[in-house]
Image (cartoon, rainbow, N blue to C red):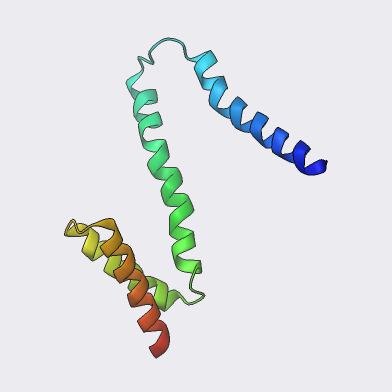
Length: 99
């Protein structure tokens, strides 16, 4: 029974988080500062969640750093995401064998 209550509370919180901005901001936001602030929030939140996870996922900073360097280089050359992810993971794995 408590599982159903947990799911209902999570659904309610998720709904409120998505509904509240729509009720308060019915008109278009005209402030350039506020619009640019809202534009960059998803990138900042994604970076804040991803960067620490990258360096703590392998348990070794050296393997994580080598995988990250390979991923950044391959992404710079506009390779597909699957290639970048597999190459970075493979590099971190191979580096882990040597460290």
